Structures are given as C-alpha cells and as structure tokens.
Image (cartoon, rainbow, N blue to C red; front, side, top):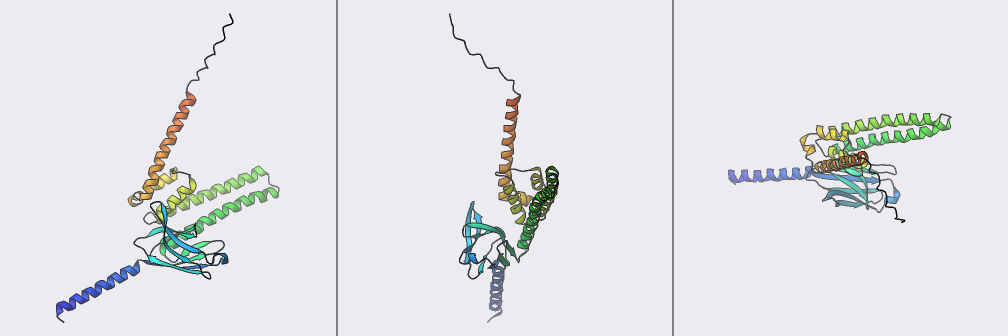
Length: 263
C-alpha cells in the first residue's frame, strides 16, 4: 500500500467518524414514566406543527408505566406531548437524553438545557397561579372571620394586583433571556394566545417586540402574529373613531308625519 492510498483510507475513516459523531449529536431520547394506572395501554405522541397542523413524529405505548421515544433532530424546535388526541405538555426537541414524568397532578420534562429552562418557568408560573387561588380562598375566610366583605375584597384585589405584576415581570424577563432560542418566541405566543381571543398587542407585549433582536422579530410566527395584531388594532381604532363620530354628530329631529286631510 503506497502513501497516497494510506492517506486516502485515513481520510475516509476520519470522514466516517465525523459523520457518525454528527448524527449521534443530533438525536434525542425520551425515557418516560407514568404513575397513573389508567394510562397503561394509551399512546404517547410527540407532535410538531407543520403547515398549521399537528404532525406526529414519534409515538409509544405506555406499558406498565413506562415508555420510550427517540429520533433525530435537524434543528431545535418546540413540540407537544399528546396523550391520544389531547395535547398535555410542551417539549423542546433538542439533542440529548430527557426524562418525561406523568403523575396525577403534573407532567414534567427534564434532562436537556432548554427543557430544564422551560419547566423551571412553568413551575414558577404555576406557583404564582396557586398563590392567586389561595388569595381568593383567603377572601372567603376573612369574611367568615367577620371582616367586612368590601374590605376583604379590597385586600384580595391588592394581593392579586401584586401577583399579577410579579408574573408579568417574570414572564417579560424570561422572554428577554430567551430571545435567541425557541423558548422566547414560544412563550411570547403562548402569553398572547392565553390573553386574547385574536391577535392583539398590549403596550408591554409591543415593548418586548420593539426591544427584541432581529432574529426574534423575523421569526415567521412572530412576524405573522405581529402583522395580524397591527391590522386588528387599526381596525379597532377605526371602529372607535367611527363610533365617536356617530355619537358626536348632531341629532336630526325626525320629520313629522303628514296629517290626513280632514276637509
């Protein structure tokens, strides 16, 4: 074997190793567990949105509380965990090993960087939501303890306002910290869809868009949402102006009806 043949074989071997390592680095594995006995026999699906439709990319049956999912990822993307036909939890499809846990009260995904971030966010949001529910329970308790109902409601409103500000600040901070990955746009759109029945932008949401880097603003889903929101805001403003114009227009008295000629 001459030197040229040896170098060629070494190059091909190095190329094969590189391809192998590259393909390994773009795979995901999900080890799932369920402590809910009634879920045995049901199918867990991993689905992504393509052309505005949920498309299954992986599935597995829950057997004795366990299931496994695996596949390859060309790029990091958001997906959803489905139980039969119901979407039950978000998941970031990224290379690495993940653990998906299903209990009676919660579903969590951990093991990779972005999923750990996502479910830390979900846990904090749920914690604030739980405190808001507890605040409502305390209102009833205060009334039972003899506090004036108006005073009890005022205390509840003050508590809810503080919790609302805390949640709003946390969500804005999380989106800013994740402008450059899939979590920023995904959480932004999640907040929008849970706040409005159709695309709109509050001043806070508009501020997030204005301060975002170009790659966030150029995200196709963000561009589509922002475009529709601006159209809707313009339509609402035009309708309000038209209504104001009609309300301010001088009222023309009705023309008297002709009286019958009696002669």
